[in-house]
Image 1 (tube, one colour):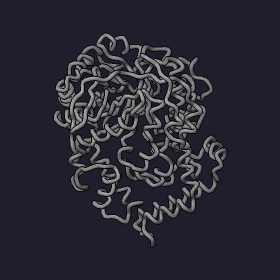
Image 2: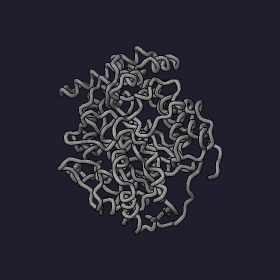
Image 3: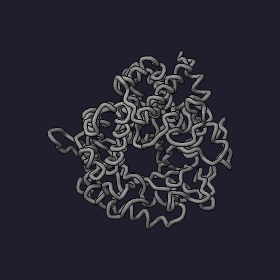
Length: 509
């Protein structure tokens, strides 16, 4: 691959997030694949890739226990898969592929499903015992899978997706966030703190271990979390959140906030005011001046809340940039990309905080999650939460229409949305927005499309046709690869074949 210098961050924006990222960047960027195959799409040209990256994520249980050759033959024949992404480090049973009836696995602990090489883990609190996953008898999944995958023409990417729940190991606890009441976060919406040096060093060590110890194809890292204010407002695809769990106020965030001139106690008090507002709203108390006005008044009275919000968002971007730089210092040819939580396609607030144009300078690929089938039910939850609080002055349908207009969507009414899901046009629009955001950078967009992501009985279910429509829409939006999501072991064979049919019709496989 050819190398070229980063486009200077200062050419993008002079925002605070960029100032932070500048301090940790310095490596060269690596372009991935050239483009070809021009097709016409609604009066504009769409360039299809010559050799798209066709990715299939998979839990480690199947890779550790099952015969690999027939499994990989199935992936290749159904959908032309040329890249595996495995949840190689996780303390979450469902990512390990071990969820049983009721969502629990007795005695599950998780950890690293490859062999930890401890020389790479410096200045962090975890021991070999903390990292080693006891399931599957200590099988090194990467060592087992990589040579067989190569025989089938597939690369292997470790997919490191942060755990929200504190792992059942005491040495993890100190790396987790602290809410504005001073309590340690122990699960969603919290997670490990991106300003905690022990957590950064652990994650850098994990990536270095995989990069130096195995013949991997690249990395994807992800964090399914949002910032403190959005958690306090409880505006998310997950309902029933506690507004008192706004993060992070750990010792490292407090020191960083003070160094930036933020009045920490005023920020903490402001988050308390937001919590009071949310709890009253949930009880049906209508503010005298209306919901949105009351919310805005809190921000005017406590601008430190927004300063703390910016601190959290900036810190995550700095964390990601540091990981990118670390990997490129080990092997500049290894592509590094980011899983982008679907909530960014629902929330105008989180979309503002996740500026993809800025992210492009420390990315080789981006993976926006555009799960259109499950989006319907998730968006209903999101809009209901928003209407309870900041959009409480609106009717349910008016709140939905307002959100649609803000996000440029044209989908079903709220009473039908969960049962229909979002359309394939949602996939195309969001992929195109991502492609346009990184224009001018050698960054590819590999969206994650929904194949049998679990839903309730009353929600829309995937079909081969709906999967094919989503896959086609992704490439019509300008994708250069696709991530058939979210886990091979969840997918119905006929629906994975639906993705393959669409890819063949576009002559991509």
